[in-house]
Length: 256
Image (cartoon, rainbow, N blue to C red):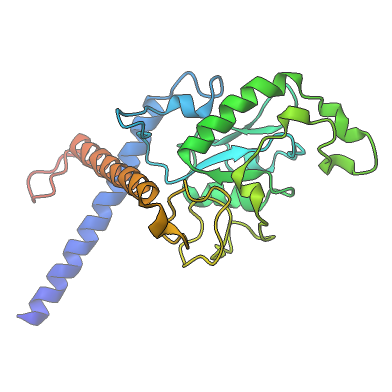
């Protein structure tokens, strides 16, 4: 009986994996059919619905923000992850225009290839704050200021108020960030091991591995609530996609 059970379990696992692939394909097709015309026009956080608790209704585990003052316009991120980044017209800098565009691995690759480390993982609340601040200051940004002096293209000379206070910049990043996944990485939701130092947005990030987490349980609860909602959203989307495919998990009829 044990020998008979093992192949049955294997077949069940294969069926589940196949179902996941089909449902994800269906989810992609649905997303393509529901392209938001505001993409690239409004701030990326405005594309995401917010529920009654103030939590974003999204499948993204973390959000990306480009420090446009530091960006040198190399186009690398927009080439690697074109569903997430674009080159804005006013100053020729990269901008994250869609928080639910490319998959996590593609976005991480784009961040890792940035020559000036100007792309940051940030939590939802900081994304909203930074994007609103950017809209208010980039209109007066003196982009020619970096050409003055001897610092070269990486200079932030003349940035003024456009040089935003990004939490990631409060600590050093390694030269292979976020690929190394360093235990004390300052970027949001990169480190999973026990931290020895606090992140740049401590304690409000609510990191589960924060060295002072026990002192601020309210932030951990908030982050856990958002993570739970994110998982529930993914589950609901997969169920809807499976239903659209005519596949029933209980072994019922199947129509493709």
